[in-house]
Length: 385
Image (cartoon, rainbow, N blue to C red; front, top):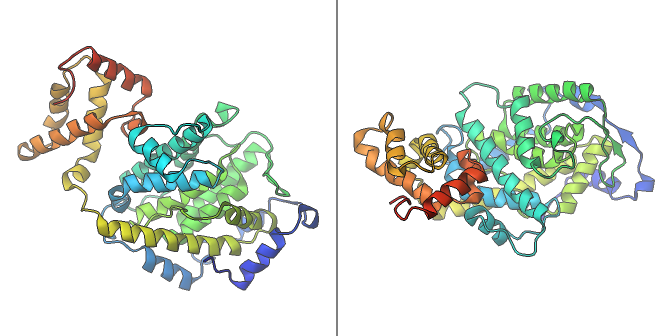
């Protein structure tokens, strides 16, 4: 059960009033500019300690992203489904599993719902790849990364495709809220840079995650899909620290909407804070149970994950070439002879399982996949073996 502190209850009472009883309000720069990393904390120390204790994993000292990669399939399903569900998407968790693992769209669902799920999957993979390849000590966030996460989430969903991954060029309203965001693109860009700089200066991964959940949607830097972007952004510092992810499973959409109203119309974080803590507890309970039932990830697959992806991409991009020869050429320079056969088998397994729902993982386009598949159909001996 979601437990609210008195200050969070105060926020809830205000936002539950009819719009006619609330006050119109614009963007308050002081909410961002008064925040000083290492001095200001939205999450009290006792709360941060609790979150660290709940989210700690056995991969704490492993390379960034190790834990989330080990849980990748479940993470893609849970986070894609839950975040989309909070936007009104009617895909079930099982529908989402079939779409992500098999590339099978659910019958009777609108195309926009299918697109939303696939976009989440692509954005999560992009974010995890970025975190996993980031050099130790380097800032987590850049405008480039945030823009590309938004672009992945927004693909084929915005009225103007030019708005994908771009700072908003026009005014925007937020549903039933009385909040009016900034509309000047230059000011939005300057404030977005300040959000990113302050986020990078925050040392604690949970404080950093929560900061992004507050300030990305509050600024509304994009034409739409700001909240989805912030929910994925909140996971980046958790991925990096090998902490349990925040999937938002079981988070009621109305509770989240009310918490965001507290940010928009009051500049108050307490209701979102309590929801964040409750949601993270739910995530860690589920992932602890899952982890206990899973075998350890294949160490070869982890060690050569980039090489495996490159080899799969090379095969598909050369549909007329001999797949075995392409794989062996890709592995020859980097895999020791005693591991070559095992890694070759992993690549061929990936090729056998390849479908449209996983193409983004390999940097492939549907047209490339279709051309490769057609080449197989015209060559009885063309499939990997």
